Amino acid sequence: MEKHPEVDVLGGADIQIDENGNYIACSGPPLRNPNLIKSYLLFFSNMFTDCTVMYRRSLVEENNIKYQEECYGIHDMKFYMDASKFGTIKGIDEILLKKRIYKEQVTQVQLRTNGDKRANAFARCQRESLKDSGFVLDDKCMNIINSIVTEVPKDHYSVEELNDLYRVFKEIMLQATELKVDYLKELKFALTKILVDRVMTRVDLFSDEFIMGGVCNG
Image (tube, rainbow, N blue to C red):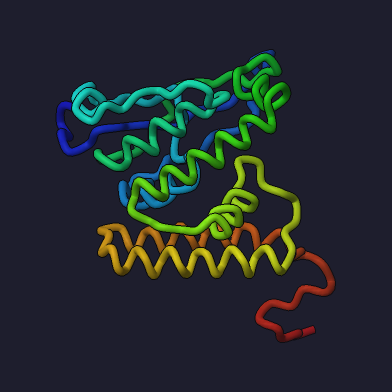
């Protein structure tokens, strides 16, 4: 942080382990592009591991950024969303710690005991993040985002849902162009990735029915 005064929030990666210390997974390399991070933070936060994060005290004090109450365990996401409006957020590739995943972990407890309240808080954070970034979307558009871009993805999305999300994302891109945001390229990438991830729930790449490019060479 001393060598990079332009960075206000910095996070890294982790290795997830179970209650007995057995390896589960690696969180993967965090995003390094601040504009891409800003784009994703319009909707959610999975850029790096929360407990690896460092941030500048001046950023939170000068912009009155605080951890919010009644977020049911997603206060970190809300903090990053708020911070992204004022500062530069970046990730580094290093694995900084081992994170134990167990049933009494805050996230797991909140999902079990306050699932609906957590989902409502997640939706509220999305609405506030988009609004604070200058986007003006009506309730119908926001409801589409809140019901499809959720913390826990669904196993399957209907064609109607995907079409609705596509139309909302086109509106966001239109407004972003009019706003002349400095992260337009990264925003387009993020919206495309979010949409494609949900489209792919409708596709089984390894089924007999799937044909790459619509052409069968068999």
